[in-house]
Length: 193
Image 1 (cartoon, rainbow, N blue to C red):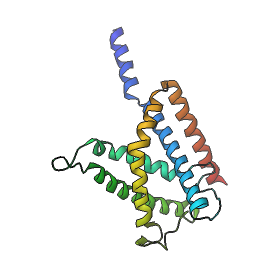
Image 2 (image 1 turned 90 degrees about the vertical axis):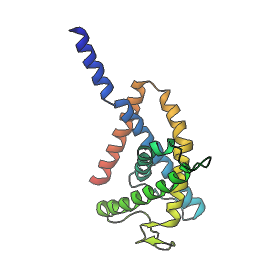
Image 3 (image 1 turned 135 degrees about the vertical axis):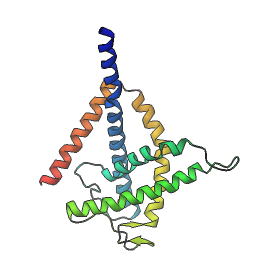
Image 4 (image 1 turned 30 degrees about the vertical axis):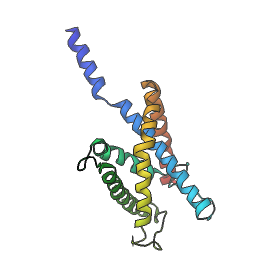
């Protein structure tokens, strides 16, 4: 009887993916912060508009980048590992690149509608860009997001996985929980003020 109970408890622990959720929360936060840094660098150093908080929330993070990165990680994980192409020619990275462009453009378009609905405006305007739709999406930023997504999938994510792999489950869960709490408080502050 004791072994059945132990086996049930072990199965529950294996089924409940708390460490995995915590890892994804950490990845979400890291990519949100990196997205904020990317936006600020573009604004201050490339376009020379001056500094402004480029995130929808108070903290130094753009959550749309976090959502986009997680969607890349989840949807493209299997494609990235396949080898597609004739003979020695591997077309997988090219397919991943175009998939990232499609996903990023869709996330940006949906994000613009969500921001407009919740805040009255969205935080970018691509009206002056070639091949744009309502100033919400455009070819140039979509290609840049494709390049950024390749950097995420092939360079940053393996590094982040090695770093989170070194954390104990307890530290992983506490860190993921603290990040979730921080983002929740920031989100509540945004909608209540």
